[in-house]
Amino acid sequence: MESVTGTTDGRAAQASDGLALAEEVRDALGELTLPLHLPGAAQARQDIHAALDQLEDYVLPRYRSLDAPLLAVVGGSTGAGKSTLVNALAGRPVTRTGAIRPTTRQPILLHNPRDRSWFADQRVLPALNRITSAAEPARALPAERAGADPDPRAMSSLVLVSESTIPPGIALLDAPDVDSISDDNRKLAGQLLSAADLWLFVTTANRYADAVPWKLLLEAAGRDILVAVVLDRVPAGVEDEVRADLAGLLEREGLGNARLFVVPESPLDELGMLPVAAVTDIRGWLLEISADAAGRAAIARRTLSGAVASLAATTASVADALDAQSVAAARLRDDVLDAYNGAARRTLDSTQDGTLLRGEVLARWQDFVGTGEFFRSIESGIGRLRDRIGAFFSGKPAPSVNVEAAIETGLQAVIVDEAAKGAEDADARWRNDPAGRQLLGSRDLSTVSDGFSDKASAEIRAWQGDLLEMIQTEGASKRLTARMLSFGVNGLGVALMVVVFAATGGLTGIEIGVAGGTAVVGQKLLEAVFGEDAVRRLARKAREELKLRTENLMREEATRFLSLIDDRDAAALAAGLRGQSTQLSELARRTGAEGAA
Image (cartoon, rainbow, N blue to C red; front, side, top):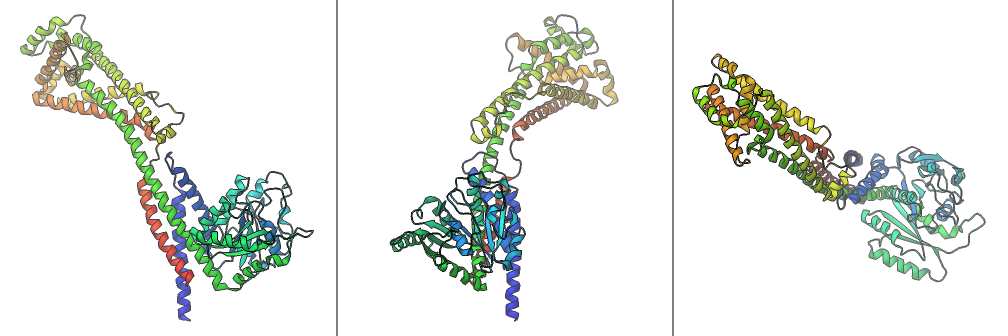
């Protein structure tokens, strides 16, 4: 007794562990997106959808109820005679038959009355509503009629039919055609077959080699599911030949252990029923399964093991697809960041090669430093320097605010122009990449965003404010306050801005003399107030602040592109899936070993 109890407890623990892992995998797969258009991504999305269906429809219900009755799905090609076979096994017409295709417009589940509780709730196939019909389920929805489009309610419903002729412990589910002209029917047929413990696959003497049925049979072989093949409507005199040929095909494709039943071509009675003798062997096989509780448990565990092994393979392949998404996303991010980093770099280069001291900025600076009042308190050496370059200056002296405004306007123009080039570069790179092209869609991000020019102006004014604050902080001592008051904080701030922009690499001819001379004036002025080391430090800090603000502006512009990329860590998700795949493989091995035992 202890041994039996221990075995039972072990199986319960294994079922509990399996359920927990299956739920973890369901949650992980359910949260996944593969947004980038990459080779294999569409297939991976389909695999995820199919895996989630099988988890909900079969794996989770079976781990929750290992002792539940087996579900045998009767599937096959259009016109193979599935519904006629089901009616024969039930002993009366319970499902629609006829020449109009598709005939099976809603799945019908036949069960023994003792097993009703296992199927009346949403335990298996939870997405399908239940319709209970004891007499004529094919007419359960009056709107459904021959030649009409399927009622939407029918396609999301499962008709339950209680039949005492169906042996307890096993239920039959009449599925739509696997090659139906209806997309919904084909999808539902595949979903139902994935929810089965075993397949009763129906084909005909002239259709048994068709590609679609064999694709599903090969999937069954890969999952190690128990399959019985019904060769229907076999003409007299060719039974042995056709049986041998089909048996050879099954053997070559790894399905040599599949049971093979032959139903001869037979006339139907007035109710459209086959002779009882035509399905005697199939009925006997179902009764054998019903009578053997241990055998049913072994079938369930064998199928469950195959389904879990299939999930292990799917999670591993999805992890590969996630890795591909991660690599592609990194490539797209790098393209955008490279484009906008280049824009920031070019902007900063233009502030260091003298370019900004052209035109209006240079003119306003000339006006400002040409003012005699400004130099009134400067040492005679600085005054003489002013006199030497004063010949270049003319016009009425302007206040420092004019220089600040000119610098803002000039720097803003450079930033906006370079940001536009960065946007054009990033947009072009993405449009040359299928993944980037898909993300962009109809969006045109090849120009700067609305309001960017105003943002640039605000950042420049904030930077100018930083410089004035630096001047005030540096001159906080009483010794420097008097000099600062004589020159003015704004005047010193403007001088610092000019020093920051004073390199002459971008200037030519007379501009070099003017820019260089005026820069020396600013440099000497600042050194007279703060000292040489302090000026170097102030200029370096001012450049760093400008660099930081420029890069932040460009980075913010880049988010227009980057926000289109899924920001979840695909590589980490892939690693998690691979770990789950390994656990699923081990779970499949243990479940299969338990079933074999």
